[in-house]
Length: 251
Image 1 (cartoon, rainbow, N blue to C red):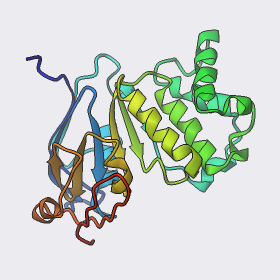
Image 2 (image 1 turned 90 degrees about the horizontal axis):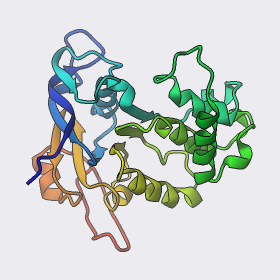
Image 3 (image 1 turned 45 degrees about the vertical axis):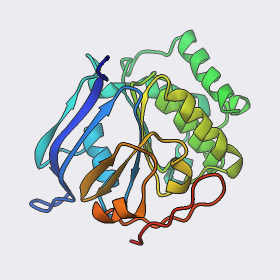
């Protein structure tokens, strides 16, 4: 049996923003090739802190993050942050936003090639925004901006894609298409998806990590109330439709 390839190891990490006060406590996680991990947990529990540690934006107080991503290291990670109102004020075209995802590969002074531009345009076409390629990013809706930033995150063909609440500003029409696209991308890359919407992502992700200062990894996308109570995962969920009904404990 072939052993899965490890891309990132988070080993016994303690991290936070004030000296001596850790938001994350002894957190460990392995990310394997083609993983699709849903990261859940309460506000303030450490989800965003964990992402910053993995992205190399926050140095742990203790512990380490080991990357098995070749020479480009952390540049092999694509990141889709939450969209905010400040993004609308930046004077840059939609196509240039997507191309900016290549900065980790190219020298900052290097011009983008014809192939680069064709790849960017093809990605925009895939998310049905090719006709807006030359429009200022600030003229798009929140959902449209999220699609553009997804294209930026994947243009460099990362080995890992990290998404922070990607459906926060996505219009309902595109939400289903977004998750279908993520399933497709998961054939090429591992995905870490932070979301409060466990009812939706449980039908998309393969496994779930609950972060509430500590991290508890569940090697399934089906989580019972009893498991979350045992592991101190304070999530409330009521699902309907084809997903089995589950009610999980409150914050």
